[in-house]
Image 1 (cartoon, one colour):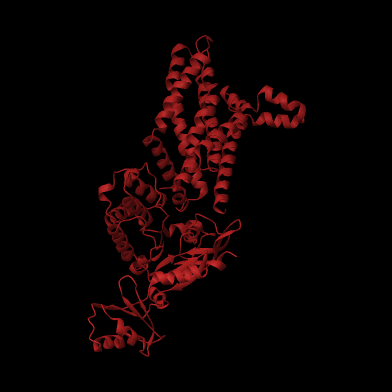
Image 2 (cartoon, chains in turn purple, yellow):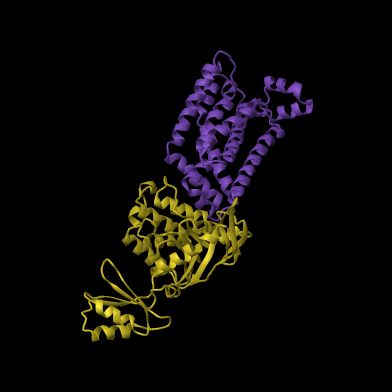
Length: 244
Length: 312
C-alpha cells in the first residue's frame, strides 16, 4: 500500500477510536442546525435555498477546524511518535499529505452528515440543487484551507493549545480581510492596489462566490493554492526542525 | 553496514556529536557506550534520519542518509529511545500500519507478522491497546516494529532499558539470534550488556570517539587485567611474602571483606606463583580467581579522563 494511504487510514481510524470524531460530529451538526434555523432566519426568509446554512460555516470552522488540526503534528511531537514517523520510509510531503487528507475527509464526512437539511429544503420548496452542490463544494474547500493552515501551524509547537490559538487567529484574519470595515481601515494607509490584494486574500469573498453557484476557476484555484502553500510551509518547518 | 563519516551535530554553541566516525559490518553487534548525555541518542537519530547532521554524514547499507534518505530508511530497522508508539492503537493495528507504510506485500507481510509476533511472544497482546501494556511489553512492540520488515541493518537505542532481568534475557537472545547476517548497533550505558551482546564497542563522551575496541581489548586496559584475587582468612604474613615475589607489582586488601588482590608487573603471569606460595604457607584458600579486567573501571577511566578537553 502507498505510504500516504496507509497514514491516512491510520489517522482516520484514530479519530474514531478516540472521542475526537464523535464530539466533533455532534457539535458540528447541532451548531450548524441551530445557527441555520435561529440565527439564519431559515423559515422567515421564505426562500428555498441553503444560504443561511452556508453563511454560518466560516464561523463554525473557525472554532472546529483548529480543534481537528491542532493535534496533527503537535501531538506526535509531544508523545515522541514523531521520531518513529520520521524514521519510516515516508517523506515529509507524503506524511503531511496523508495527515491532511485524513482530516479533510473527516470534515467532508461531517458535511455529508448535514444531508437532512438538504432534504428539508427540498421538501419545503424546490431549490436550485446545483447551487447547493456548489455551496457544499465551497464549504469543503474552505475547510481544507483552514485545515492546511492548522496543519502548518501545528508543526511549530508541541502544545496543542498553542496550535489551536495560532490557527484560529490566522483564520479569523483571513475571514475578515475582505470585510468593508477592514478595507476602509487600509484605504487611507495603503495604495489602492494593495487594498485590492488584501481584499482578494479574503476567504469569504471566494467562498461566497462559489456559494452563489458560479464555479469560477479563480475561486477554486484560490483555495487549492492556499492549501498547497500552507502545506508546503508546514513541510518546510518539519524539515527545518530536523536540522536544528 | 553502518558507517558514519565525521558525523557532527551542533546546537548553537553546544556540540552534541563531534566528528564521529564509526563503522560496523554485517555479523557485528556494535555497542555504542557512553555516559548519559554523551551524544549516543543524537548520533543514532542522525543515522536514522530523524535529525540532519550539521556536518559530515552517515551511510546505511551504502545509502547516504542526506542524499538518499528513503533508501537508507528502508534498509534500517530502528527502535527510538523509549520505544514510542501510537497508544490508541492495538498491537496488531500498529504492526500492520508499520508494514503498510513500509510497503510490504500482503503475502510477505503476513508471514513476517506471524514470525515477529512469535519471536517476541506478543500473541497474547495482539488485540490490546498499546496504552494499557506494561513497559516490558511496550518495549517488545517497539522491537517488533523495528524488525518487521527484516532489515539488514538494525539500530536499537537502549533496547533493554527498564526491563526486568527475564525480559532483558529474552531481548538479548533475540538480538543474538538476529546478529548473524545483520549489522546491529545498540546503544547502552549498561556494561553487563557489552559482555552479553557486543563483539565490538565504541565509547563516546562529550560527543567524541574515545575508544573503539573489542570487549576483551578494553578489559586488557584495566589495571585488574591479569590480577589474582583470593579470600583467605588470616593471610597477614603471606601478604608480605607475596609482595616480595619478583612478578608482583603490588597488593591491595579490601577493608570490608578482607579479599586480597595481587597485581602483576606488566606482562607477567602471576596465578601459578601466587598459588604455589599460598600452598607452601599451608593457607586455607576458600576461593581464588584470575581477573579479566573490569569494564566499569576502564569505562570511568576513558570517559572521565577526557571530560575536561571535551568542552573547552
